[in-house]
Image (cartoon, rainbow, N blue to C red):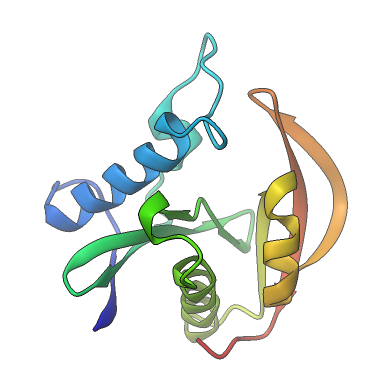
Length: 157
């Protein structure tokens, strides 16, 4: 059975926050094709939004195994999604798209009508299938190019 659990703070580390960190670190620090470049001034916690109080974190479990993690950040009067990570062994099984849809719906429940994210080049088509469209320009962060994208409304998760 697939369930998604949410939490708001890393003030008290627990199994849920530990699972979140493990997935995000595995996907974005350990895997070569998604690895964040190591550079001076880099901070894992600031790069992946671990610090802000305006975040909602999510971990998806399949039969009690943590398979996916994501985050909603409320910043500059808008809801932003990301990062989204799926353990390598569980990719291609719709965990990533299901996580994004659940976060979109959660934002709708919180009163948000638009959801924003920054997609790496290799993920743009993935997000387009969910209904995101490109807007604004691209930008580079730690040597990685991102495309701003937006989605309106909610989704069937």
